[in-house]
Image (tube, rainbow, N blue to C red; front, side):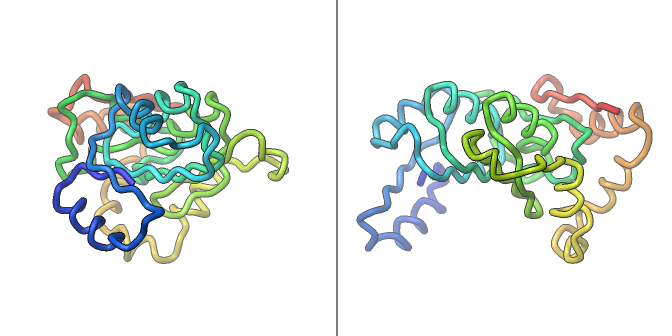
Length: 204
């Protein structure tokens, strides 16, 4: 377990103080250090499960980790759920990037699927703001291959409890339901002040 926030790290250290099988490291993960940290802690190259939630440049970490030879069988990662699959959005890596508690974090499920497909993974489920990808070695267990739009609707957009759990998303999602030029302009206005720090593409 990696945690950079001192307060959160202290809580984790207390909760898991009796667990000798769990290592908690107070480290800020970056694309530059993630493979060295995993190697230093003896993480197997083909480990079973990766849970990623850093409210930041998540995809940059995955590119470096998988590019460095690590291949988790299952990846669970937080997505920026306000963006439907046709919007490819990603926060780019920078050493100064820290989540400010706003909507500028992570990536859309469309961008996550695009990147991880090229890295050998298949999107198999979405649970609200978490997406689950399996390694291609298990892809034969899913026939036909799930469609990202169907998974997004079933796992988030059409969920009954969505309005209760994600009330603050409703106004943004309504604004993203228009034409492509308007969607792009809305996102650019939403992230005013973050120019040059994200990737954005809106597709048909």
